[in-house]
Every structure is written in C-alpha cells, then in structure tokens.
Amino acid sequence: MEKKGLDNVSFELLDNSFIALIGHTGSGKSTLMQHFNALLKPSSGTIDIAGYHITSQTGNKNLKKLRKEVGLVFQFPESQLFENTVLDDVKFGPKNFGMSDKEAEAKAKKWLEQVGLSTDVISKSPFELSGGQMRRVAIAGVMVNEPQILCLDEPGAGLDPRAREEMMQIFVNYQKAGHTVILVTHNMDDVAKYADDVLVMEHGKLIKHDKPQKVFENEEWLKKHYLDEPTSSLFASSLKGFRFKENPLTIKELVDGIKENVQGGV
Amino acid sequence: MPKDDAVEFQHVKFTYPDTKKAVLKDVNFTVKKGSWTSLIGHNGSGKSTISKLINGLLLPDENSNSKITVLGTPVTAENIWNIREKVGIVFQNPDNQFVGATVGDDVAFGLENRGVPREEMIKTVRNVLSEVGMLEYIDSEPANLSGGQKQRIAIAGILAVEPKIIILDESTSMLDPSGRKQVLKIISELMQKKDLTVISITHDIDEASMADSVIVLNDGEIIDQDSPEKIFNKTSMLKQIGLDIPFTNKLILELNKNGIRVPQNVKTKDELKQYLCQLNLKM
Ligand SMILES: Nc1ncnc2c1ncn2[C@@H]1O[C@H](COP(=O)(O)OP(=O)(O)OP(=O)(O)O)[C@@H](O)[C@H]1O
Ligand SMILES: Nc1ncnc2c1ncn2[C@@H]1O[C@H](COP(=O)(O)OP(=O)(O)OP(=O)(O)O)[C@@H](O)[C@H]1O
Ligand SMILES: [Mg+2]
Ligand SMILES: [Mg+2]
Image (cartoon, rainbow over all chains, first blue to last red; front, top):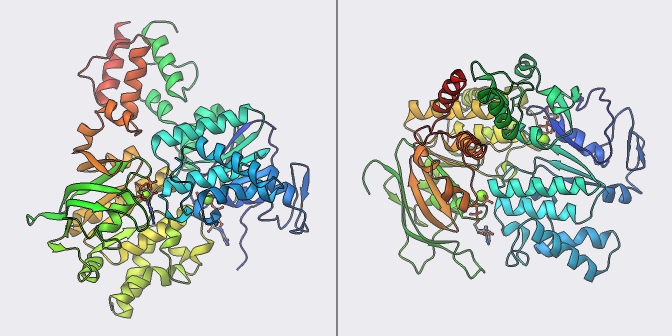
C-alpha cells in the first residue's frame, strides 16, 4: 500500500533559530524530522540542509557529514541505544566521527553530566535504566556530536518536570550558542516560551508556518485543527472584563497583562 | 488485607540483579478497589519497578519480609499466571508490548490466550480499536505507526482483555492533548461500568489530578499519599523533589512576586479568576 507521509511540503528555516514542529497524532512530524538527516528521502522534491542537496536519488553513501551536522533524537530513545554501557553509547558518535578514545570519553562524560546522569549510571547497560534515564542518554548521545542542527522528537516525553525544564534550558542555550534547534512537541506552553518559529502539520501537509503569536492568534482555527492554546492564553480569555494588548502566551506575559489591567495601566 | 483493597505492598524491598543498592527500600501502600490512583516521582524513583512487582514480572528480594497482595492473592512465583490474568500493564514503551504482525492480531493476542471464541474476539477487537480511534489501521503493522498511534494500540490491547486492574505507565505521554483527554475519558468510563481499578504513572499533572489518591515516590521511598487537592497544594515539597506544581499555584506565586497580593484562601483556578475579576472591577 502506497501512502503519502508528506504531501507537497515547502518551507525555509532560518539558521540559529528555535523552531517548534507541532500537529496531532499521525500528522507527519516524525516523518518530516527523518528527512532532515536523510533517514528518509523524499519521493519527489528536494531538501537543502547543512550543505547537502537531498533528492529521491540520494544514496546512502557519503552521508556521514550530514549525520554529524544534523543530529536527531528519536521519539523512542531505546531505538537509538545499542552499546554495552551508557558511556560507550555516548562515546560512539565522537569516535565514529574521528575523535580519539580519550577525547571522546572526556566529551561523553561532559554531556552525561549536563543531562543529569550520575556517575553510577554511566557504567550500566543502557537497557537497565528507567525510561527517563534512557531518554537522557539518547539526548547526550546526539548532543555530544555538537550538530549544527539539533532535531528533537518529543524529547520531554518521559522526563520528570525538573529534568524537562533543565533540558529545555540546555536546548535554548545550545541555540543561543549559534545552533539551530527543531523541536517536536505537544506542549503548547513550551512552544510559546521557547520557539521563534512554528511549523504546523496535518495529514502530511504543512498547514501553517508562522511566529507563535500568529499561530495562537485565532481560537477558532486552533479548535478546528485540534490544537491547544497555551495555558496562559486560555486563562486570559476566561477573565471577564480584562483587556490584553497582546494575547499573553506565557505566565510572565499573563502576569504583566493582569498587572496593567488591575493597576489601571491600559 | 481488607476486602476492598486491590493492591497492598507491605515492607517491599527490591534490588535488581547484579546491582548493590536496593531500588525500593521499605515500600508500603494500598490501592482501593475501584479507585484511580496516580503514582508520581522523579526519573529513576522506582515507579516502573513497582508496576512490574504488582503483576509479578519482578519479585521482591528473597531475604526480606516483603509482601505483595493483589485482589486478595499473594504475588508469588506460583500465583503469577493467576495474577497476570487480572492485571494489565500498558508499558512505558509500546514497542516492548507488540507481539502481532498486524494491529488487529496484536489486539487479539490477549483474547486468544484467554481462549475467547473467535467471533466474540473479532467483535471485541473492532470495538476497542474504534474506541481509541484506530479501526482504520487494523491491518497496519504496529512498527509502521506514529508514536501516538502506537500508544493508542497498546492501550487498546489492554482494554480488550478487560483486566481488573489497569496500570498505565506513562501511556499517554506521546498523545496530543485532545487524544490524551479522549483516552483518559474512555478509561474512566470503563472504571464506572466495570469495577476497574486504575493505577496511572505519570508526569502530567492534569492526568495525576484525575485520581482519587496520589502516591508520591522519592528515591524508592513513599513520602506521601493523599488526595490530589492536598498533594498539589504542598508546593514546597513538590518543588524540592523536582515535581511540577499546578498552573494556578504557579500563577499565584508570580502574581505575589509582582505586587498583586493573592489572599491565602484563594486556591483553585475558579477562585483565582473570581478574585482577579473583583480586583479589576474595583479599579
Ligand atoms: N514506517 C512507516 N510506514 C508506513 N507508514 C508510516 C510509517 N511511519 C509512520 N507512518 C504513517 O505516517 C503517518 C505520519 O506518521 P508520523 O510518525 O510522521 O506522525 P507524527 O506526527 O510523528 O505523530 P505522533 O505525534 O503520534 O508521533 C501516520 O499515519 C503513520 O501511521
Ligand atoms: N533492568 C534493570 N537493571 C538494573 N537497574 C535497573 C533496571 N531497570 C531499572 N533500573 C534502575 O532502577 C531505578 C528505578 O527504575 P524505574 O524504571 O523503576 O524508575 P521510574 O520511576 O519508572 O523512572 P522513569 O520516570 O524515568 O521511568 C533506576 O535507578 C534504574 O536505573
Ligand atoms: Mg512522531
Ligand atoms: Mg518508568
């Protein structure tokens, strides 16, 4: 059975931006993500990314540099863990891309610490970890290669609230340090808080590409496409008698807006 | 064990093979029959381990006085088949659960094992698949589904066999918000109809708030068990162990920080809305 995973999708993304990719279950987000590093190739059309030009004819050879420059953290972390120990697993990338064992180990340890894994975990098998611990190993295993473009497919799923917050901060810092981050998420509060740019998928089609403020502008449109509003803007629209200059998307914007109303600043 | 308990843990200690430290030290709790209980706690605190102890996939340390009872039956090596008939776990990673070549086969698997007649089986499979919105995928390979679709199939597979106790181990983590609501609604309706007990392991505060009772686990120890209202108002405890606090509490904290004093007795979202609207009218 032939089915279109993606249907006539066209867009350009800016370097150094933080992009959120959203859409309901089965809309094509993971399929799109796997095109960024040519794990999947387009049946027709072209993709230009990290100096590569990918078409249906692109072979599987010579993709090593692409895989280094475009790192992908899969939706299910288990599917990218394979070595005997956590440390070896995270070392694999840097070694594969030509680093000495010693350098690779130092780098791996640095990233394992960054994602909050303690030293007693790193000698364990990656399959003898809890779900959230596996997720962290998978994230470390991709970030250790310091890709130019970091693609994250629901990296927050399975992380506890503090880890999620910390991890989002790591991604933002990574973007600020001069990289591009593409994040698949169902969490609209994260979209509002972190994204510069949003792609919305539905049935394999790109139905919107805009800034968060614009994407969350129209309640009717969001409802029609089964998308949620950020919690703060939902709360704001339920406050009778309040007027907000701009739809508040984050708690900070909401508090500022409430303040202007009750202190008579509008 | 009182008749109305579905699960009881007494002094449960558990250590994984080839490791030194016990993951669970002295765990005690009960889950009431017909109730919805949420189990929350940081990554690695032992939630999934507890779920596997409930259906005997793991057994407590031998040299301990651990005792686990499920629906009146002690969980021991001899009883595990009996127990697994009654307890259905939707695992954290649905890929670890799929056995069938197609979605339909996969959901039918548990029924086949229980010797359900073919005709009834076909009917049940179609029913549960349509309930979770996946009937059109009945002939698809589970491996070729999206993350959220896989989670829906994993849930359907458990619903099909109608266990007495359902354990959801972060089973909605990859569903979109409306999909999550829909699935939780199906389960809570089933709970009303069929005297089902639900244990949900989740990091999602809205899902945890649906429970009758919330158990808080920290580093393998239970530090609290209470109603969601009470637990989620203990903001300093939650923050300390790295868990989330509800949106309303976060907003009240921020408002206070920004010079809008919210009185102590304002606690729920509706109370806060009402208070803010009054404040606004006075201006
Ligand atoms: N390997 C595959 N072979 C065939 N169809 C597939 C394959 N992977 C995904 N699909 C189908 O393509 C569609 C898009 O799937 P995709 O995984 O991209 O969705 P998604 O937006 O990531 O959803 P989710 O939020 O549930 O992860 C779905 O209908 C899915 O069933
Ligand atoms: N098969 C295993 N062998 C050895 N240790 C394990 C195994 N599975 C889990 N552990 C360890 O036991 C502890 C508890 O793990 P568990 O999976 O119960 O945590 P959890 O609360 O479910 O966490 P998460 O929220 O990340 O899923 C963790 O420190 C983990 O590393
Ligand atoms: Mg996906
Ligand atoms: Mg777990």
